[in-house]
Length: 179
Image (cartoon, rainbow, N blue to C red; front, side, top):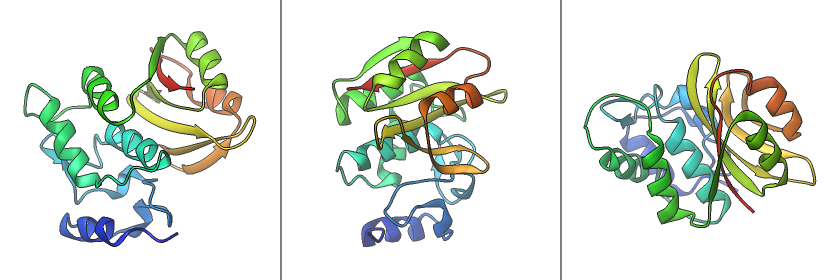
């Protein structure tokens, strides 16, 4: 499937002419290439992992959101208009609106156990030393599709155990998940 014309127009209007940021079927796979968008007063390549995770899961569930509109909406949910990451209360509020029925668990072991059983979810963890949101959804029995994980893993399918051992190495871990 080709990216919808509206998405391409929004990309061009935002100054993001690098189509490698997107998959051919319209998911966002590479945050580093989103310098044309602004989120929380700075280029989205710096801090848009939260909106990317929301956008991709909404897309997986058949919703046709415009990424630029989602950035604006999530930015407006923050109390202060200033640079920074997506805060958890904003993620919860946005997910309640677009993908209700989520549940949340804290801690590496609890998140890992629940992720293995879920149909889709969003991890909040540290990729290296940087707080990061990554969305995923189940493709097969034990294979999950991840986008925007890290350099070299922009669009990857793997067992949940591989993601857990390769990425949930330190710091706090939260999981928002759906069955």
